Every structure is written in structure tokens, then in C-alpha cells.
Image (cartoon, rainbow over all chains, first blue to last red; front, side, top):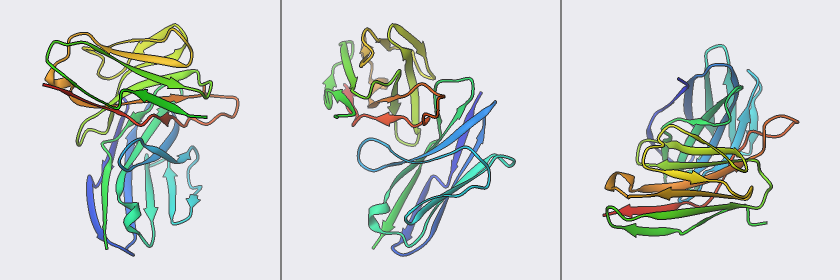
Length: 111
Length: 116
């Protein structure tokens, strides 16, 4: 059965800090890994990763995938209070039509 | 272009009552999904559909039924609500994979359901 585990489950830091969120997975026939940000309502898409070692970047957020060690990290530099959210990681296998989500990491940025 | 919409936004039911949640998307997506989200559990897939007239069970299907009579709509039904079904329900949609299309799922705003 496909499985996604995120760590830590909860993280509290001060504004300006850099954070690293982790996502490890077990999936038969991996196709892609996706990161989402969820504030008060619906998850919004951040990144999709399919190849090892290629960093995806958007402003202060970046993510990379390691298909050999079966994990991905999401980095946020110079954090702001607006980065406070739940960050969700999900994987898709080649044969399935559905994403498998991790439990999420609740990130809180204190001013 | 409204994206994915859900109705209602909030609902309170008594145990044993029934209701239907409606999801609509205007992006011409083939795939549609229903998830529930509970604290500390992430998103768990209830049912999904890969096209009009087809549905399949997800991770937690018991107590729910779905229908996809039109491509743009996906209905989630609770025939006899139970307190364990108190949750936030999200609908999502995506393109068929392949042909260079992204695997991204687009989510609706959610429905908060409380069963007393």
C-alpha cells in the first residue's frame, strides 16, 4: 500500500528563520510528488516534482526530490507570518488515478 | 472561470439524517475526487471518478455514496449520517494524466459538516 509520512508534524519558528519540511514515501511505480499549502480553506498547489536532484523554486520556497532515498524536502527561507499554514505532501503512482497524502506539517511563524 | 465550487459551505445534521454535497468544476477535468480532512490525518480519499458515469472507492468509502452523471458535477451522499462523519469535506478535480498535462489537483473551498 502506498504511504507518505511527513515530519515534523508541527513546527513553530520566528519570523526570518529558515525551515525545512520533510516528506518520505513508499509507492509502487512512482510518477510524481506534489506539495500543497493549506491556509484556512482549500489546499493550493506549490510544486510538482518528477525527477531527482532538480530543484523547483518559487520566491522563498524551494523543493527537491531524491528518488533513490524516497524523500522530498520543502525549504522556506526568510519566513514570514504569511507562511503559517499546513503543508501537505502527496504522491502519485503510474498506475493509479489518485494522490496519497501525508498527514501534513503545521507550520507557525511567530513575529 | 470559477474553478471548483462546493455547496453547501456548512451543514449541521442529526444522526441518521441524509444529505448530498455537490461539487462542480468548469475546467473540463476528467477526474474528480472527494476527500475528508480530520485533525492530524491529512486528506483521505473517499471516492473518485475518472469520467462521466464512472466511480471508484478510495481509502475511506464506508457510509458514503457518489454519482457522476455529468462531467462537471460530482455528488457525495450520506444516507444515514453518523457523528464519525463530522469532518471537513473537499472536492478536487484534475486532468487525465499524460499528453504533457500536470498531475495537479485543484481543490474546492470545502464543506464543514457536523453530525450531532
